[in-house]
Image (cartoon, rainbow, N blue to C red; front, side, top):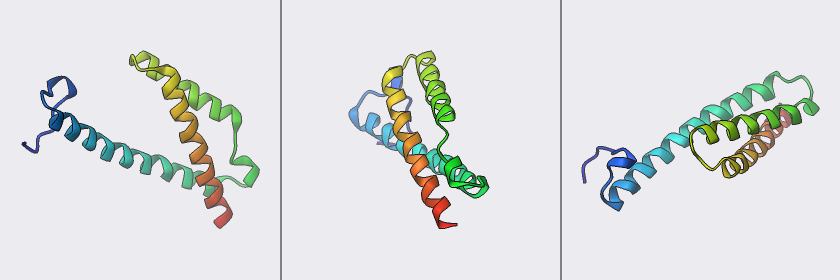
Length: 101
């Protein structure tokens, strides 16, 4: 197999599919690292611990993800559930960093 990662529509073998998925997983982790850097900044910037959890903002972020998923033809409810977990994990991370300051 070559080192070239094919687009999903161009894959003809499971090895090609798996290589693409593995590459995307690496990219997703890199994007999550960038997202969590913003959580670290928020933990540094917010003046009080009770400002970490912002339910209206959480709802907005999840609604945005749901709408983007729907527009992309993805299962919006499943993506919203993933974002619920992502946001809750982000909040826990931010709280932990806030407590370490």
